[in-house]
Length: 102
Image (cartoon, rainbow, N blue to C red):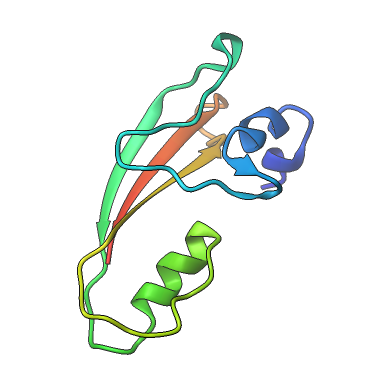
């Protein structure tokens, strides 16, 4: 669980941060990793559906490290997040790319 903050995981975390906050990536962007740290990317698309006002947009904003919008507007918005991890089974780092559709 503490791999991301360890010396081995810190370079992966640094590639997704900007000024110690999560960097926002567009749909076609991805973190720039040095060739020595290249890892496979695992992509997931997550569609959040539910009643109005239950916190779907606030959850996506929190995961993305951005403030929740003060006003609620009915819309479909896509947010792309990257998260490095080291699964216990493989022992090799991977980069999760999460497309959150709210």
